[in-house]
Every structure is written in C-alpha cells, then in structure tokens.
Image (cartoon, rainbow, N blue to C red; front, top):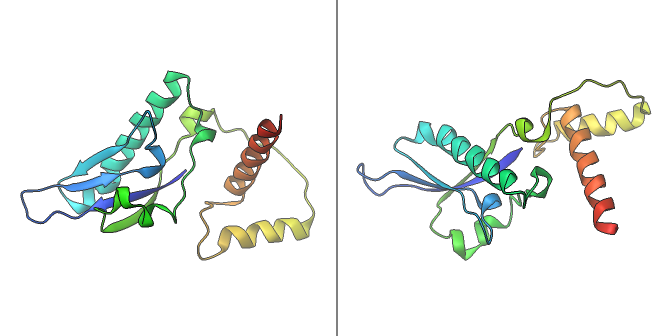
Length: 148
C-alpha cells in the first residue's frame, strides 16, 4: 500500500528528520518516526507503519481495508504544517491481509487495455495489473458492506 509521508527537515546536524504518516493518525493512533539521515527515512517510516498497522489490527478495531491514504489533502492540513517535504512510499501489508494466491480470470481485451493504461499512467499508484484488480475488488466489497 502506498503511504504519504510528511517530513520535517532538521535545522541543524544535531536534529533528526521528523516523519509523520497521516493515513495512520486518527482518534486512537498516530504514526511518527525519526531518521538521523535522509537515506534512513524509508526504513524508519516502514518500521513505524508496520508496527502501527499491527497494533491497529490486533486491537480488533481496524482492518487493513479501513486504511485510506488521501495523498492530496495532507499538505493543506494545518496539523501537518511543520512538514516541508512530502513523499510517497510503498509498504507491503500483505502479511496483514493473507497470502497471495494466483488465479485465472477472463476479461474483455478492451477492459484489460484500460486497466493497463491506468497502471502505466504517470501519476498511477498501482504497482501492476494484479494490484489494480485487488484494489478495485477491495473498493467494491467495501462499498457493498457500507450499503448493508
């Protein structure tokens, strides 16, 4: 899953980079970390994300499908005004949703082309066709559950 990171650049060499993951900040949880070097930001953020998601899932109050990352709105949120840099990282949450399983499906070639174009689009957040189809299925199932 893609997560937007807000990063606060340190003012001097004695201060660490501050990291916040807004998608995991809510009334019960918050996800913050720090990194001494810029190159350590992805690893430190990934560790914080995995620990927070694990805690959220184990609490029984959340499911991975409940996590939504609104890439656009965080930058304009006053709560994150201290962040001067915004980046997106991909963190594998598959251990929280189950094991990958290969399936064989049949789709019209025009639909496959449209999916592939969406995956290849410059601002696409999809890793590949399978990721697109999995996200589409999760969205549809979530919508059905809300309608009940």
